[in-house]
Length: 390
Image (cartoon, rainbow, N blue to C red; front, side, top):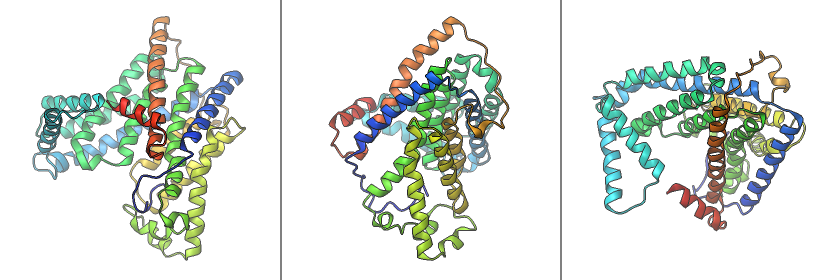
């Protein structure tokens, strides 16, 4: 449902996009204030979110370990040496032509080249390094409670997972150039910040960043479908072709495709309604977050029934746990998280400094992405995006 025919492919135009972002920001701020005033905490949801995302990293590294030799090995489909040579040549070309390269892209490219220069540019150690990443991810997932007692060690562990998957993503090239591969990197950053929220206010702030990621995946997907200019979505007939155009259909997909047109129209309407309605998750209303979690769960289950999107569905639901507070009915059956050891004053100060830099930066990144939906109407957003990229 979140993926489907997008029509002519032009950038969707949304005149009210900037207004919706302002409404979302104010609603999130009100919800944060409400969380602090009511003493609402996210200890249990944070614990299980971190654990599930870590196991997603492990699953990904395990999959790479099984296929690395055939994909990027010396005799693979896309040999690693060729990919690294292209990365180096592209960077050198941009420098010769005086083209601007985002500093983050330059730094991660240099890290990728240096990493594989140490571990073998021909990819002979790719499987071994992927196995190491799998073991490290499992250790991080199993030691969540211990790492949360040492915020800086938690941050370093997730930073290591992020960098390791990033160099593998660059090395895999087109084999890891999908939406959920980027989502996994984004999840690594958010999980690293979740461990820095020592107090309830700090944790609540980072949790709302994770919520912003969840709502962007679903609510923005629904808005993009309606504003793309594709008449199939506006006429509610998109599902009539969705099941045969999606990647790797399941055994049920042919039967779903054979349903009458009225059934496809109803399912398209339900899909758009569920995606757009996730916007209520940012509102400080009773049980709004729980209702949004149910909608996200239903959307992802519907996608899983008809198509195979790797770990995208599992990761989306794991991130949606940020919508649930510790007193939520969905978490009552889970064991209570043990309290983390209070960090030292120096550690608290360092964590606060990191959050003061990282949270506004990540929030601004989310904000400037709306410039893609305004087609130049919000010139200050477009200028901000260009400045951040360089």
